[in-house]
Amino acid sequence: MTTAETLLSRQVKSMWNNQSEQGSSYRNENKSQSLKRGETTFRRKGEILLQSWRDTRVVNMISTIHDSTMDDVPRRNEEVKKKPICIFQYNMFMKGVDGADQYMSYYSLLRKTEKWPKKVAFWLINCALFSSF
Image (cartoon, rainbow, N blue to C red; front, side):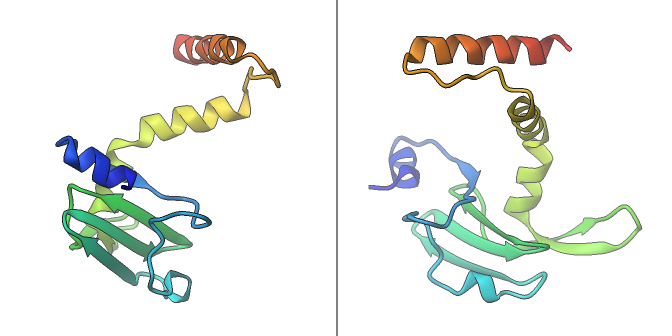
């Protein structure tokens, strides 16, 4: 049973960005690498949607909330661009979380250690330092 199926069986709706294609059970069977800019492919298994879309690179999304519709998204220079609605909502709601993770990866206090309590303590200190600014 996959993660999305497990969450769905517990009535938890979810959406996430699947970066790695290697070894993933969520690989889209279509040739997502051969997509042209702005094209999309999707597969559906029950309520689980796997969608690949190419902008500057291929973005893979897994969602139990959305369908595969495309929406017009305004850009800064008054252009309108077609984008899958799940990617648009992911970008709209996850900016703070992704930004914090990215910033903490640049200035990480984590050190190579065998003991997991040290890793947890360093991670908590890292989060506290990031939140204090």
